[in-house]
Image (cartoon, rainbow, N blue to C red; front, side, top):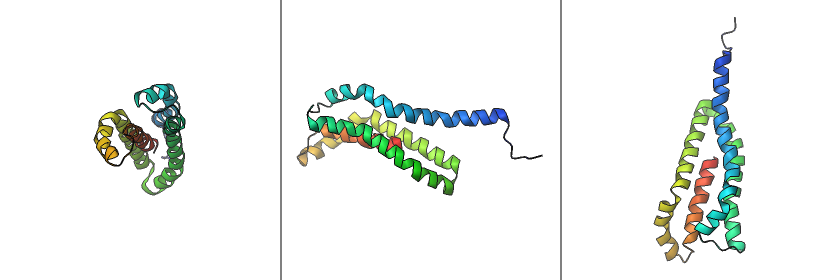
Length: 138
């Protein structure tokens, strides 16, 4: 008898656990569209080319990092194992989500640096969100 066969119940549990991050990734790709108008208003971004293109990077950065990480993490998982790669990806997702959730307090620390360098302080909020979404996509 082959001892490498996974029992049916355990197989469904594994498939279910793998589906959770896939679902989170898919939802994250589309959920941002719902709050983009609110984000533009809260960050006081100009509705002209600068504001809209900056906010569009929230969608683009996530999709770009998500696509690139598929190839990178596939290869990393060959070296360190599927469980470790899966765990690392989940940790990165939580770290990125934490950055996005607390973007306001993180950006407050950056505003003085932005003002010293002559940059728009409202863009600090956008940049923190972009970094958080990029990490989240990994």
